[in-house]
Figure (cartoon, rainbow, N blue to C red):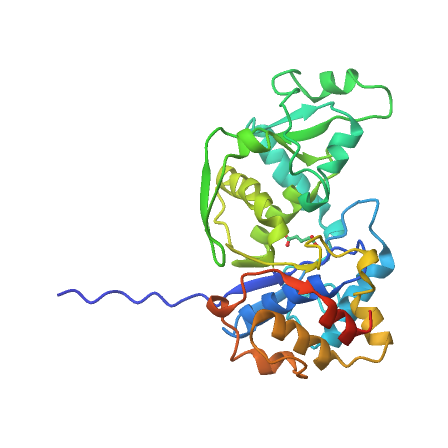
Length: 332
Ligand code: GLU
Protein backbone atom coordinates (compact mmCIF):
# COMPACT_ATOMS: atom_id res chain seq x y z
CA UNK A 1 0.00 0.00 0.00
CA UNK A 2 1.34 3.43 -0.80
CA UNK A 3 0.89 6.29 1.59
CA UNK A 4 -0.74 9.23 -0.16
CA UNK A 5 1.47 12.28 -0.20
CA UNK A 6 -0.06 15.02 1.84
CA UNK A 7 0.14 18.33 0.06
CA UNK A 8 -0.18 21.16 2.55
CA UNK A 9 -3.13 23.34 1.56
CA UNK A 10 -2.09 26.87 0.68
CA UNK A 11 -3.80 29.39 2.94
CA UNK A 12 -6.42 31.10 0.81
CA UNK A 13 -5.90 34.63 -0.45
CA UNK A 14 -9.00 36.67 -1.04
CA UNK A 15 -9.79 40.22 -1.95
CA UNK A 16 -12.22 43.01 -1.37
CA UNK A 17 -12.48 45.00 -4.60
CA UNK A 18 -14.69 48.06 -4.15
CA UNK A 19 -15.29 50.40 -7.08
CA UNK A 20 -15.50 54.00 -5.94
CA UNK A 21 -18.46 54.69 -8.22
CA UNK A 22 -20.93 55.32 -5.43
CA UNK A 23 -21.28 54.80 -1.74
CA UNK A 24 -21.22 51.29 -0.31
CA UNK A 25 -24.75 50.05 0.34
CA UNK A 26 -26.20 47.10 2.21
CA UNK A 27 -25.94 44.86 -0.83
CA UNK A 28 -22.20 45.41 -1.38
CA UNK A 29 -21.64 45.22 2.38
CA UNK A 30 -23.14 41.73 2.47
CA UNK A 31 -20.84 40.46 -0.31
CA UNK A 32 -17.83 42.04 1.41
CA UNK A 33 -18.78 40.49 4.75
CA UNK A 34 -19.02 37.06 3.12
CA UNK A 35 -15.69 37.51 1.31
CA UNK A 36 -14.11 38.52 4.63
CA UNK A 37 -15.65 35.61 6.57
CA UNK A 38 -14.67 33.06 3.96
CA UNK A 39 -11.00 34.03 4.19
CA UNK A 40 -10.78 34.88 7.88
CA UNK A 41 -12.52 31.64 8.92
CA UNK A 42 -9.63 29.72 7.27
CA UNK A 43 -6.78 31.94 8.45
CA UNK A 44 -6.12 33.21 4.96
CA UNK A 45 -4.97 36.64 3.89
CA UNK A 46 -7.19 39.34 2.53
CA UNK A 47 -6.23 42.27 0.36
CA UNK A 48 -8.19 45.32 -0.57
CA UNK A 49 -7.89 46.65 -4.10
CA UNK A 50 -9.45 49.93 -5.16
CA UNK A 51 -10.97 49.48 -8.62
CA UNK A 52 -10.94 53.09 -9.71
CA UNK A 53 -10.16 52.77 -13.41
CA UNK A 54 -11.40 55.52 -15.61
CA UNK A 55 -15.15 55.47 -15.54
CA UNK A 56 -17.54 58.40 -15.63
CA UNK A 57 -18.94 57.42 -12.25
CA UNK A 58 -15.65 57.21 -10.32
CA UNK A 59 -15.61 59.72 -7.48
CA UNK A 60 -12.36 60.25 -5.55
CA UNK A 61 -14.11 60.79 -2.21
CA UNK A 62 -15.94 57.51 -2.64
CA UNK A 63 -12.64 55.61 -2.42
CA UNK A 64 -11.92 57.01 1.05
CA UNK A 65 -15.54 56.51 2.04
CA UNK A 66 -15.49 52.83 1.01
CA UNK A 67 -12.49 52.17 3.26
CA UNK A 68 -14.13 54.06 6.14
CA UNK A 69 -17.41 52.20 5.72
CA UNK A 70 -15.74 48.78 5.63
CA UNK A 71 -13.66 49.56 8.71
CA UNK A 72 -16.69 50.92 10.52
CA UNK A 73 -18.47 47.62 9.87
CA UNK A 74 -15.57 45.84 11.55
CA UNK A 75 -13.92 44.37 8.45
CA UNK A 76 -10.17 44.54 7.98
CA UNK A 77 -7.54 43.56 5.43
CA UNK A 78 -3.87 42.64 5.51
CA UNK A 79 -2.78 44.55 2.41
CA UNK A 80 -4.33 47.56 0.76
CA UNK A 81 -3.95 51.09 -0.54
CA UNK A 82 -3.95 52.52 2.97
CA UNK A 83 -1.51 50.02 4.53
CA UNK A 84 0.64 48.85 1.61
CA UNK A 85 1.86 45.29 1.19
CA UNK A 86 4.00 43.06 -1.04
CA UNK A 87 1.87 43.67 -4.12
CA UNK A 88 1.59 47.46 -3.87
CA UNK A 89 0.19 49.58 -5.35
CA UNK A 90 -3.36 48.43 -4.53
CA UNK A 91 -5.12 51.10 -6.56
CA UNK A 92 -5.84 50.22 -10.16
CA UNK A 93 -5.05 53.65 -11.62
CA UNK A 94 -1.51 53.16 -10.29
CA UNK A 95 -1.17 49.75 -11.95
CA UNK A 96 -1.74 50.64 -15.60
CA UNK A 97 1.78 49.58 -16.61
CA UNK A 98 0.92 45.99 -15.68
CA UNK A 99 -2.27 46.05 -17.73
CA UNK A 100 -0.28 47.38 -20.67
CA UNK A 101 2.11 44.42 -20.33
CA UNK A 102 -0.74 41.89 -20.39
CA UNK A 103 -2.25 43.60 -23.40
CA UNK A 104 1.09 43.65 -25.18
CA UNK A 105 1.46 39.92 -24.61
CA UNK A 106 -1.98 39.22 -26.01
CA UNK A 107 -1.23 41.50 -28.94
CA UNK A 108 2.04 39.77 -29.76
CA UNK A 109 0.23 36.42 -29.66
CA UNK A 110 -2.49 37.66 -32.02
CA UNK A 111 -5.24 37.31 -29.42
CA UNK A 112 -6.55 40.87 -29.64
CA UNK A 113 -7.47 43.11 -32.53
CA UNK A 114 -8.14 46.82 -32.99
CA UNK A 115 -11.79 47.82 -33.02
CA UNK A 116 -13.28 51.10 -34.29
CA UNK A 117 -16.86 50.51 -33.14
CA UNK A 118 -18.61 53.44 -31.55
CA UNK A 119 -17.24 54.98 -28.43
CA UNK A 120 -20.47 54.16 -26.65
CA UNK A 121 -20.22 50.41 -27.39
CA UNK A 122 -16.69 50.38 -26.19
CA UNK A 123 -17.31 52.47 -23.10
CA UNK A 124 -20.19 50.25 -22.07
CA UNK A 125 -17.80 47.38 -22.13
CA UNK A 126 -15.25 49.20 -19.98
CA UNK A 127 -16.98 49.08 -16.67
CA UNK A 128 -17.86 45.95 -14.73
CA UNK A 129 -20.35 44.15 -16.97
CA UNK A 130 -23.26 44.48 -14.58
CA UNK A 131 -23.27 48.06 -15.86
CA UNK A 132 -24.03 47.29 -19.42
CA UNK A 133 -22.29 44.84 -21.66
CA UNK A 134 -24.27 41.73 -20.83
CA UNK A 135 -27.18 40.97 -23.06
CA UNK A 136 -25.65 42.83 -26.01
CA UNK A 137 -23.66 40.40 -28.08
CA UNK A 138 -20.90 42.03 -30.10
CA UNK A 139 -21.06 40.82 -33.70
CA UNK A 140 -17.26 40.81 -34.08
CA UNK A 141 -17.52 43.48 -36.79
CA UNK A 142 -13.86 44.51 -36.55
CA UNK A 143 -12.38 41.00 -36.32
CA UNK A 144 -9.85 40.56 -39.16
CA UNK A 145 -10.81 43.95 -40.56
CA UNK A 146 -7.55 45.86 -40.12
CA UNK A 147 -4.02 44.59 -40.70
CA UNK A 148 -2.73 46.55 -37.71
CA UNK A 149 -3.55 49.21 -35.12
CA UNK A 150 -2.30 52.11 -37.27
CA UNK A 151 -4.63 51.22 -40.15
CA UNK A 152 -7.56 51.03 -37.75
CA UNK A 153 -6.59 54.40 -36.24
CA UNK A 154 -6.49 55.93 -39.73
CA UNK A 155 -10.13 54.88 -40.21
CA UNK A 156 -11.21 57.05 -37.28
CA UNK A 157 -11.58 60.82 -37.07
CA UNK A 158 -8.61 62.61 -35.45
CA UNK A 159 -8.66 62.38 -31.68
CA UNK A 160 -10.30 58.96 -31.56
CA UNK A 161 -8.28 55.81 -30.97
CA UNK A 162 -9.26 52.22 -31.69
CA UNK A 163 -10.02 49.90 -28.78
CA UNK A 164 -8.50 46.45 -28.30
CA UNK A 165 -10.84 43.47 -28.37
CA UNK A 166 -10.20 39.91 -27.27
CA UNK A 167 -10.74 37.20 -29.86
CA UNK A 168 -12.96 34.61 -28.16
CA UNK A 169 -12.57 30.94 -29.11
CA UNK A 170 -15.85 29.22 -29.99
CA UNK A 171 -17.31 26.66 -27.59
CA UNK A 172 -19.07 26.22 -24.28
CA UNK A 173 -17.08 27.01 -21.16
CA UNK A 174 -17.75 25.17 -17.92
CA UNK A 175 -16.62 25.87 -14.37
CA UNK A 176 -17.75 24.94 -10.89
CA UNK A 177 -18.80 27.91 -8.82
CA UNK A 178 -18.13 27.51 -5.09
CA UNK A 179 -21.75 28.40 -4.28
CA UNK A 180 -23.80 28.02 -7.44
CA UNK A 181 -22.28 24.77 -8.71
CA UNK A 182 -21.59 23.95 -12.34
CA UNK A 183 -21.93 26.93 -14.69
CA UNK A 184 -21.84 26.89 -18.47
CA UNK A 185 -21.77 29.65 -21.04
CA UNK A 186 -20.81 29.94 -24.67
CA UNK A 187 -18.95 33.23 -24.56
CA UNK A 188 -18.43 33.39 -28.34
CA UNK A 189 -22.14 32.87 -29.02
CA UNK A 190 -23.57 34.88 -26.10
CA UNK A 191 -21.12 37.74 -25.67
CA UNK A 192 -18.88 37.77 -28.73
CA UNK A 193 -15.40 39.24 -28.68
CA UNK A 194 -15.07 41.62 -25.75
CA UNK A 195 -13.19 44.85 -25.12
CA UNK A 196 -10.06 44.78 -23.03
CA UNK A 197 -8.94 48.37 -23.43
CA UNK A 198 -10.53 51.54 -24.74
CA UNK A 199 -7.13 52.46 -26.25
CA UNK A 200 -3.63 51.06 -25.65
CA UNK A 201 -3.41 52.70 -22.21
CA UNK A 202 -7.10 52.54 -21.38
CA UNK A 203 -7.40 49.16 -19.65
CA UNK A 204 -10.95 48.15 -18.78
CA UNK A 205 -12.41 45.96 -16.08
CA UNK A 206 -11.76 42.52 -17.64
CA UNK A 207 -8.10 43.14 -18.41
CA UNK A 208 -7.41 44.79 -15.06
CA UNK A 209 -9.24 42.33 -12.83
CA UNK A 210 -7.61 39.26 -14.36
CA UNK A 211 -4.14 40.83 -14.41
CA UNK A 212 -4.49 41.95 -10.80
CA UNK A 213 -5.97 38.77 -9.35
CA UNK A 214 -3.15 36.83 -11.00
CA UNK A 215 -0.38 39.27 -10.05
CA UNK A 216 -1.60 39.53 -6.46
CA UNK A 217 -1.82 35.76 -6.01
CA UNK A 218 -5.55 35.77 -5.33
CA UNK A 219 -6.87 32.21 -4.91
CA UNK A 220 -10.50 32.99 -4.11
CA UNK A 221 -12.91 35.52 -5.59
CA UNK A 222 -16.15 35.78 -3.63
CA UNK A 223 -18.48 38.43 -5.05
CA UNK A 224 -22.06 39.24 -5.97
CA UNK A 225 -23.73 37.00 -8.53
CA UNK A 226 -24.30 39.91 -10.91
CA UNK A 227 -20.73 39.17 -12.01
CA UNK A 228 -21.36 35.50 -12.70
CA UNK A 229 -21.68 35.94 -16.52
CA UNK A 230 -18.41 37.91 -16.56
CA UNK A 231 -16.57 35.00 -14.99
CA UNK A 232 -16.63 32.94 -18.18
CA UNK A 233 -14.92 35.79 -20.03
CA UNK A 234 -12.36 36.08 -17.27
CA UNK A 235 -11.72 32.34 -17.46
CA UNK A 236 -11.15 32.62 -21.21
CA UNK A 237 -8.45 35.18 -20.47
CA UNK A 238 -6.84 33.03 -17.77
CA UNK A 239 -6.72 30.13 -20.19
CA UNK A 240 -5.17 32.15 -23.00
CA UNK A 241 -2.59 33.66 -20.67
CA UNK A 242 -1.77 30.27 -19.15
CA UNK A 243 -2.57 31.51 -15.64
CA UNK A 244 -4.26 29.43 -12.93
CA UNK A 245 -7.63 30.99 -12.16
CA UNK A 246 -8.83 31.54 -8.60
CA UNK A 247 -11.84 29.72 -7.22
CA UNK A 248 -14.98 31.73 -7.95
CA UNK A 249 -17.86 31.97 -5.50
CA UNK A 250 -20.90 34.02 -6.45
CA UNK A 251 -23.38 34.92 -3.75
CA UNK A 252 -26.89 36.38 -4.06
CA UNK A 253 -27.19 40.13 -4.03
CA UNK A 254 -29.52 42.22 -1.91
CA UNK A 255 -32.52 43.36 -3.93
CA UNK A 256 -35.56 45.52 -3.40
CA UNK A 257 -39.02 43.99 -2.84
CA UNK A 258 -39.75 44.26 -6.55
CA UNK A 259 -36.74 41.99 -7.17
CA UNK A 260 -34.76 44.84 -8.78
CA UNK A 261 -31.25 45.96 -7.96
CA UNK A 262 -31.09 48.42 -5.08
CA UNK A 263 -31.55 51.98 -6.28
CA UNK A 264 -32.13 55.38 -4.70
CA UNK A 265 -35.90 55.00 -4.99
CA UNK A 266 -35.75 52.05 -2.59
CA UNK A 267 -34.51 54.30 0.22
CA UNK A 268 -31.07 55.26 1.37
CA UNK A 269 -29.34 51.94 2.07
CA UNK A 270 -25.86 53.44 2.02
CA UNK A 271 -23.76 52.33 4.98
CA UNK A 272 -22.74 55.95 5.58
CA UNK A 273 -26.41 56.99 5.82
CA UNK A 274 -27.22 54.22 8.33
CA UNK A 275 -24.21 55.28 10.36
CA UNK A 276 -25.26 58.94 10.31
CA UNK A 277 -28.67 57.88 11.53
CA UNK A 278 -27.00 56.50 14.62
CA UNK A 279 -27.15 52.79 13.84
CA UNK A 280 -24.42 50.68 15.38
CA UNK A 281 -22.24 48.59 13.05
CA UNK A 282 -23.28 45.45 14.97
CA UNK A 283 -26.92 46.15 14.10
CA UNK A 284 -26.05 46.31 10.41
CA UNK A 285 -23.96 43.11 10.64
CA UNK A 286 -26.85 41.49 12.54
CA UNK A 287 -29.17 42.23 9.62
CA UNK A 288 -26.65 40.88 7.09
CA UNK A 289 -26.26 37.72 9.21
CA UNK A 290 -30.04 37.27 9.44
CA UNK A 291 -30.23 37.50 5.65
CA UNK A 292 -27.61 34.77 5.40
CA UNK A 293 -29.66 32.57 7.73
CA UNK A 294 -27.04 32.68 10.51
CA UNK A 295 -28.75 34.81 13.15
CA UNK A 296 -32.20 35.54 14.53
CA UNK A 297 -33.92 38.73 13.56
CA UNK A 298 -32.77 41.92 15.28
CA UNK A 299 -29.52 40.69 16.84
CA UNK A 300 -26.43 42.86 17.27
CA UNK A 301 -23.39 40.94 16.11
CA UNK A 302 -19.73 41.72 15.44
CA UNK A 303 -18.18 40.15 12.31
CA UNK A 304 -15.80 38.02 14.41
CA UNK A 305 -18.78 36.36 16.11
CA UNK A 306 -19.84 35.04 12.70
CA UNK A 307 -16.55 33.29 11.96
CA UNK A 308 -17.76 30.03 13.50
CA UNK A 309 -21.17 30.30 11.79
CA UNK A 310 -19.82 30.94 8.30
CA UNK A 311 -20.77 28.07 6.02
CA UNK A 312 -21.56 28.42 2.34
CA UNK A 313 -23.65 25.25 2.47
CA UNK A 314 -26.09 26.88 4.85
CA UNK A 315 -26.12 30.29 3.15
CA UNK A 316 -29.61 31.23 2.02
CA UNK A 317 -29.61 30.83 -1.78
CA UNK A 318 -32.30 33.47 -2.23
CA UNK A 319 -31.44 37.11 -2.75
CA UNK A 320 -31.54 39.21 0.41
CA UNK A 321 -34.70 41.31 0.14
CA UNK A 322 -35.14 44.78 1.54
CA UNK A 323 -38.78 44.14 2.45
CA UNK A 324 -41.16 46.14 4.60
CA UNK A 325 -39.85 44.75 7.87
CA UNK A 326 -36.27 45.59 6.93
CA UNK A 327 -37.26 49.04 5.70
CA UNK A 328 -39.14 49.81 8.91
CA UNK A 329 -36.30 48.58 11.05
CA UNK A 330 -33.81 50.69 9.11
CA UNK A 331 -36.27 53.62 9.09
CA UNK A 332 -35.92 53.91 5.30
N1 GLU B 1 -15.01 46.32 -8.53
C1 GLU B 1 -16.08 45.49 -9.01
C2 GLU B 1 -17.40 46.01 -8.53
O1 GLU B 1 -17.45 46.70 -7.52
C3 GLU B 1 -15.95 44.08 -8.51
C4 GLU B 1 -15.08 43.34 -9.36
C5 GLU B 1 -14.89 41.92 -8.98
O2 GLU B 1 -15.23 41.51 -7.86
O3 GLU B 1 -14.38 41.21 -9.80
O4 GLU B 1 -18.38 45.75 -9.15
